Image 1 (cartoon, rainbow, N blue to C red):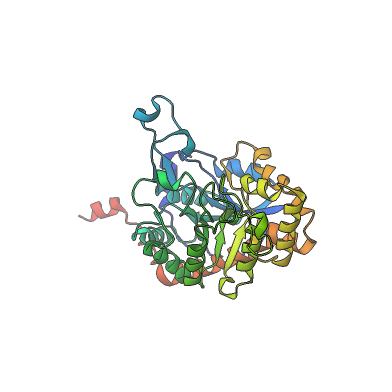
Image 2 (tube, rainbow, N blue to C red):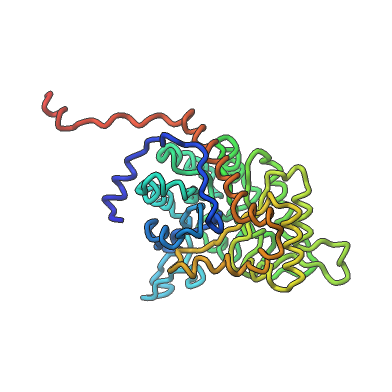
Length: 378
């Protein structure tokens, strides 16, 4: 899309006439709660192109870019232009224009196609006390567009240390301000936070688990999706020492404990990312235990791809197909909820609540003046 066309779309900020619940027909395979349209240098797909990749296999998609831009430092990499955060030692910085870009692409679609996307606000700094003001400003500028915030990261292996400025923290009041506003406005929250440090010792208490629980309990009115079940590329599932089995919980037991806690009933998990799939599918026993967990708590898990600007349909659908051994172990009702219905329930609720907040708080755009007529009157 040309820049002029993008800004023409940005200036159109009216609320949609039918901001209510929208559902897809039942023939699709899944809804995707975790999708990046753009990459770490803000390049990627157009929505028309992505709609072709989705085809009839995908119903709805939570749509966002990546909030961080990789710096191309000539002193660090010379003529080589890094496109991924692991390709350079230069810092990352927050790229707030991602939200305006996503809004422009979304608003350029016909209404029928918009119904298939749930845009998310992600271009804010969770370590900045002004971060919440960015989120509020986005809702005022683009009413009728966004349903949630995220994916945004607090503790993330290799990424957190590269971000210029203050490092985000689960104990930072700036994050509390953001979640408090999410409760007020109805925004759904998708947060990436590693449960532990990279290369953690087996049997040790996960470094960030208690802080994450405390944060969740401080904000019981916010629907929160914990991305990747707290795991990462090298942040492996928590494991008990062989001598502790039965007395010290492992990753699946920890998640089970959280889902049984009535103070965390607002917590959900996504199983997005092929790195997470490698853990879940690491052995038949782990896959079976994971399936048992999902069958016990069918309303608390969502499927997502965590695809980043996929080049083609095969690349986009591969994570869903990777999970085939897991899907086969779920009962039919659970499979339907994890793949489709939990997404629809959470995002439909967020759409209703955010649209209601906008109707109560966003003032209509002033009428456009006719500069030519004004000049004639002089």
